[in-house]
Image (cartoon, rainbow, N blue to C red):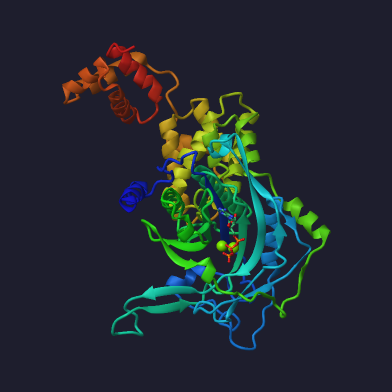
Length: 544
Ligand SMILES: Nc1ncnc2c1ncn2[C@@H]1O[C@H](COP(=O)(O)OP(=O)(O)OP(=O)(O)O)[C@@H](O)[C@H]1O
Ligand SMILES: [Mg+2]
Ligand SMILES: [Mg+2]
């Protein structure tokens, strides 16, 4: 019964990020996260191999050194870039950096870890304490404010990747083979452990998003969950039920679905009074519909932790901490607040688009986009008191839309073709009605398209006024309204579907007037503003 019900729930949850399981006040949900983040340093943690775990599909084992495959006699050499990245993260979360942290060996036997142990930090982690603050305003949680405390951050190495295949080139008969790809072996990771401070799934969703954005803003990781750059284990308990650690959660929707399933499972155990038989800390895996036991913590391995004798302490100086702290920029929330107030007055939605990177893409990062917006804004408003809404809407819709369509990186565009002041020029021409909105859109696409065709190299400087003249795009200054009326009447007389005009007039299909305006824009080659044409049609059709 329970299973059928929860299956239904997780099915309906597919692809969604919200929980459909109501949490009862009587059964309190508690969660803590263990987040593993792959750092995008140039080299691996303890070797000079290239750090590119995503190479694996086409080139397994390409980025490997003798150390990464644990040939006897090889020794680790610490990559200080990983330490720098850890410092940036720790300081951003107000975590107390240990000036003498240490590496330890965690022993276990598995094919993806040929050393026989993982180098991690157990006794003296990189930093302890710290927090991220979630809020109703910025993160859509229920409480006004919620502080999620951090227990610690530790630096450790990633393992190789195991691929379970049914029919491998090595095994032509039957059964499963495990292939090991060492590209991921020894990639630097940070494990962040939170206090069990989460009491609903909205807080978890918000924390993940905020953390993901933080590592992207710091440029220390690509931050993708699906690709495995961030991997999250969730510890769940309901009331006095011992915590259960959930693994194998590839994205936020499976994290939420697995917590919902586990909440109901533990609640049922408590209701049935089966707590005694179920009362042990265990690790369970999410298979897409339910959680199943991976191992019980009672039968947990003894990892025989010991300090790694081949690695010295990570000794840091307070000066270093201070210098790194100086390089950190404002938090995302602060940027959003700034963009929502004087002089920009952006909506929260637009301010978030300029601040939060939802996906990691090659075309721009948020810093570049935000700076491009700010500079265009400044240039546009320098000699215009006009409404500046046009700046954000052109950048987010026209410019980004075209960059995506044509696959042009923002930085290349800004450096080689269209610096912010040039875009501001075009926007001023629109505002002063030298060129219509529609023709400006076409002109922008045209120059971007040419730029792409010429492989995005630096072209001669653009002068929009010259282009407007060259292509004869100027709007008609003195509209001859009598002739415009005649033209619009002609368009109406050529409409083959009389019901359409009736529907526009009666208000049934009000928006179809845009179709008429489109015909008008074509007729007048965009030289008359769409607004003028719409007004004329309304006059002819007696629409208020
Ligand atoms: N009662 C509880 N309910 C839910 N989560 C809890 C509870 N108590 C502790 N936790 C969470 O369990 C996690 C413990 O992680 P930690 O890395 O310290 O130990 P571990 O899981 O035993 O070790 P390992 O790293 O080997 O998995 C933390 O995220 C913590 O917040
Ligand atoms: Mg754990
Ligand atoms: Mg842990």
